[in-house]
Length: 451
Ligand SMILES: Cc1cc2nc3c(=O)[nH]c(=O)nc-3n(C[C@H](O)[C@H](O)[C@H](O)COP(=O)(O)O)c2cc1C
Image 1 (cartoon, rainbow, N blue to C red):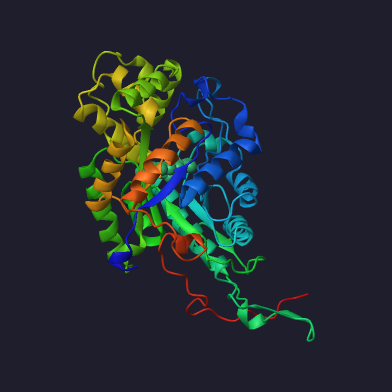
Image 2: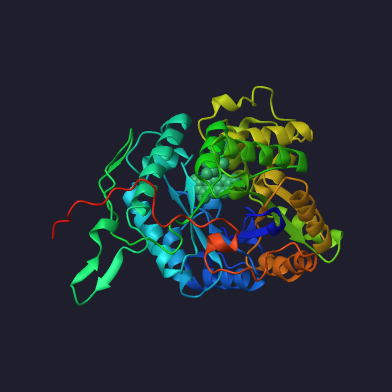
């Protein structure tokens, strides 16, 4: 990708009824909408028409702690994205699957299938899972330790990529005359035998239009960054300031170069929670209204989970107690742990103020302002080595996604920052990333396949 081709990418994070914890309690929200296709199709249409490059569905494999006070039920993202394939034609569709709980064959097959039915618009958000309740749902007493989960992720990725590469792009000759469906020299065995997973292959789905779906990763710890720099096309991250975001951006690009990759081929996309208003005061009033319906018990539960400590024991009007603050103790979401402790200490927040901040942006950068002000921030981060684009996490859906689409997106477009109208139909092309070679290097021909 040439420097001249650089443009700001936009990814719409469509989490339930909104990325703000209290979205479901807002007057305009229908709390039962998340199980209806109309809700997801409506969001996809807004994002596609606005010109977002992709839409992203997160996933957690458990009903989380305190779920009775918080909308956290989550349908299978691949099922939702498959349905959205039918009602969209341009936007990328990125879904989450866990390397700790899904075997490579399922992962490769489901994403290759999505890539086919979307004409090359599929993306996989690779997660290792960090909530202990997820382990229980798969018969485990607890999650493997953090380093072990990342080691397994790397093994699962190698196996999954090998499965995608098991079909050459031109393997299907479909020669009716000769009675030959595919060329056996172009479909390869996999025989992956790693420390955690084994798979024979080949995959039973032909190579998708993108060769392999877009690979997205969001770990920010040491191990997470190494995995991202080695495999990911796009890195999602939560960063609280331009300075922090620049340091993260530099680090990922440096690690990518050290891994022998072109740093321009690894896109860093921090999250931003935009609260847009006609004036800054109007935007702040909207944020206050949403913050005003945060359920305190749930916010405490969530803070306890992030900090791996019982936040209910903390004094609400005091700073975080001194004992909290050692990332190495956390085996869950290490980087979110550090980010929240840093936020509290740097801004001198009381626990009560911290609850508000975490309940709102969940530790992502949050800005309440006019469209021009929000576009200014995005432009500043983009032009100062902090972001190749943004994961836009609107607080209440669809209201704030519509507001962002109608005000901030046109403002960014007017400034010539977006990649509107780029040639190509796949998600990789749309993001300005290189194509995956059709014939994997060193692939061996498959043995005769038994009928
Ligand atoms: C924007 C963003 C989206 C994420 N989405 C998910 C998700 O859907 N499911 C999940 O289990 N973890 C998700 N995570 C968490 C990451 O996958 C990762 O576990 C987390 O950043 C902690 O990684 P670390 O321990 O390497 O710091 C997300 C993180 C970010 C920043």
